[in-house]
Structures are given as C-alpha cells and as structure tokens.
Length: 90
Image 1 (cartoon, one colour):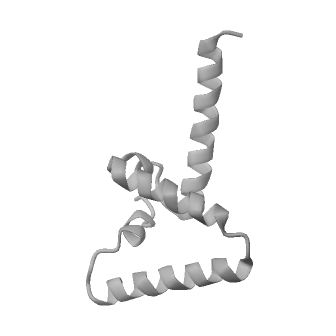
Image 2 (tube, rainbow, N blue to C red; image 1 turned 135 degrees about the horizontal axis):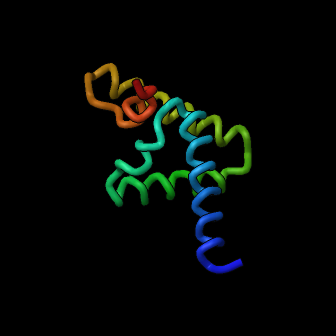
C-alpha cells in the first residue's frame, strides 16, 4: 500500500463521517465547506468544549442556554446561523 492509497482511504472515511453528520443534522454536507475559516475554528472549539463536559446535568445546562439564545434571536428576527444550516437541502 502506498501513500496515495492511505490518503484515498482517509478521504473516504472523512467523507463518510461528514455524510452521516449532515444526515443527522438534516442538512447537506455543503454546510461544512461553505463556512469561513473562523467559523470552522469556532465550531471545532465548540465541539471540543462539548466533549470536555462529562456530566449530563452540565450538558443539559449548555443545551438549554443555546436553545434559549437561538429562540431569542429568532423571535427578534435576527438570522440564526444554526437554523439556517439545519435546513434540509431541496
């Protein structure tokens, strides 16, 4: 096996993970590639922080806070990036 085979397998695995993640979120995989670099950095930070929360109660608090923030933004008419990203592709 050569390095090109390894890269091809890594790419296939990455694509499969993104496909599953997009399906779970109800969006297209394009959502991940259409983000600005700083947005991707923030997303990665958020996911890493989430993984650091071990207690279920603490995770529930974070989710409640995020839901509240998104609901307030939607109610005020502000665009909410997550709800936009979560829209299913046509």
